[in-house]
View (cartoon, rainbow, N blue to C red):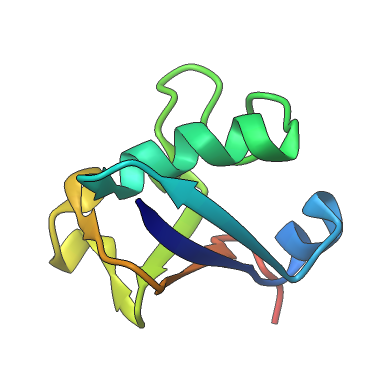
Amino acid sequence: MVSVKVEFVGTLRGIVGKKRHEVILDEPATVGMLFQKLNDSLGLKVGILMDRESMDPRSGILILVNGKEINVLDGLGTRLRNHALVTLVPVSHGG
């Protein structure tokens, strides 16, 4: 089992209703698995964390794993270790 903390930034914090959320995943845990579990555990509608058509979370959200953007890692296949911190930043977050 892998325990992952997810931090919501900007408008995502208001939509989700919390700053952080902990998710327990089976091994081997990946970012893609995390998003599937997040939708279920938070009871979110499709379209909040993932694009409605592609079901890809990356189109509207910057995803950081322990401070590194997943596109410089292995994308949705990025493995998550126990106690990883995943930060989700909406692309449109104002300024």
